[in-house]
Length: 129
Image (cartoon, rainbow, N blue to C red):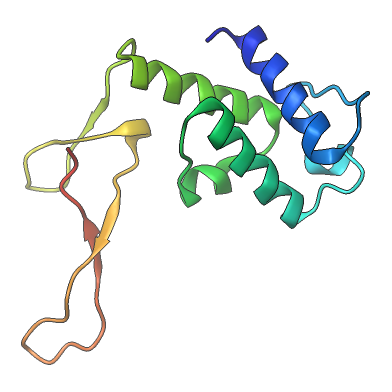
């Protein structure tokens, strides 16, 4: 999907979510630029984008978004990876063999407490398919 197509979809989604038929988003558009864009509308917007475009966002990815331009960049990357046009980023973890992670961010999994009496699970990199 080309950048123009992504912006056309986002404009339609934003008009629907915010109820403003004259709304036009640009790469620099932020929540401050649109009347009523609060945390609830942010969730609605991102869930609608996920459903319409067919992608899923992690909490980390959502937290990194600063404006609509960043969202478009993320969508382009996700769509390119999904279509096989862009290779996965290979990263290494200390002395372990390299693992593959999309966008260079390893997913985390929680481990069970150890038998040595540890009561708190720790976050460790998950094996990434």
